Image (cartoon, rainbow, N blue to C red; front, side):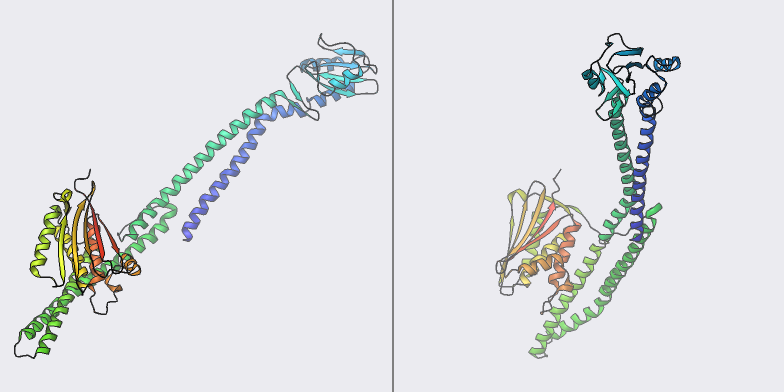
Length: 456
């Protein structure tokens, strides 16, 4: 967890560093783009500095030749108005401008423009110094002025900066996302596989290598645990067969011994029946374990389910069912020829477990209906009884924890939970889904849904 936090923090710091770099770059390019404009507007050649220079070297009768040359160089014209508004002298003044001005004229153009010429004024004891610049050279406001070039270039600069910054941020985001996904995607995928019990060996270099090693370590531990559990179950299943066979054999001999008393023979029959349940429990447990760890070979082939279910029904009826129970098989016309790519032995086992559950958990008797139906892309096998049913809490418990270890059946009928787990594992091994529907005193229905072999 610490390594992952450091990984995220590193990417966050990179992003912050990029933002600071972009800010400094924007400031730099702004200064580079507007350095000349700012120097011209507010430096030694600015209007404010120029008019002070001209006023300093000028008199009522004119200015110096050097200043006139400097004014011509910068395309500036100048004029000096007396106290009464009469033009005392001028330098480079446009022909269309008048030679005398009223107080109202002076008040008007001193705020900004004289016939579209941006002008700047400077008052002296003898009169008013006026400097004029070419048209469209400055944009003047009441309290300040800006060069037209600056006003024109500012939107271009801002738009260009916005586009460039956006592209850079998007590129940084994309590269950062790509880098994060490159490091985290194998981790996330491996965790998903690990949650399903699939062993893995993750190889990730760089910043996520420590996390990858932790995942590999967890995978190795889980694999050892799963292997130990599978070996334990397999070993117990194997070791229990011999003593169990002996118990069943002796119980059968006692039950058939006519010299034994009736009570002893009945008790021997009970031992025989319970031993058979233990044998079935061990077989189911071993099969569930193999399906869970994908070591049970599946002999799949296209099978007509209608034929399979009818064969199973005939087999169980011939073997005998409780007198107070009945069995019915219903096949939709549309499902009569439907095939499923499956291991027929395991599908029969799943159906048998559901039928035995229905009969075993309804000692008062019940009617069991096995139905086969289909849609365009699914085949469904339904096993439904009209028995006592299940409460909502019990149904939820079986759906969430369908395992024999959760059984609380005082009659020691432990196959209820394990039987459902085996049905679920068989269904999943065939890419199917198992769902249960039940209500108290309204029976129970289990539906197995499989992809149709005919689907596109």
